[in-house]
Image (cartoon, rainbow, N blue to C red; front, side):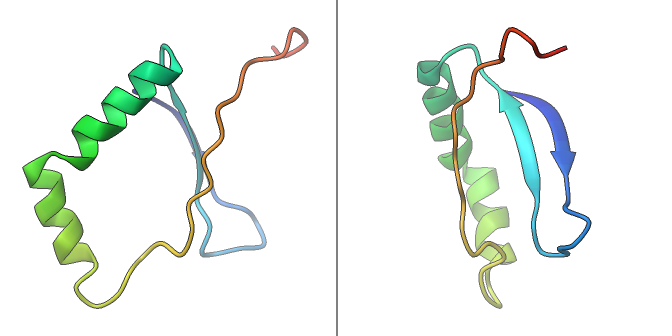
Length: 70
């Protein structure tokens, strides 16, 4: 799992858009499974939602680069 970039829309203060690069859909699943099951992350996550969830929705899309992309 490699961080590519992060954005916030100009007209929204509560939206984060980011791109992660994976070698394949299978490696993406393995990376996310390892991340979500990490005990340290689980503890930090539990503390972060103690006063309510920070994330309303998650949209997940797998994409491929177009031939005309730089």
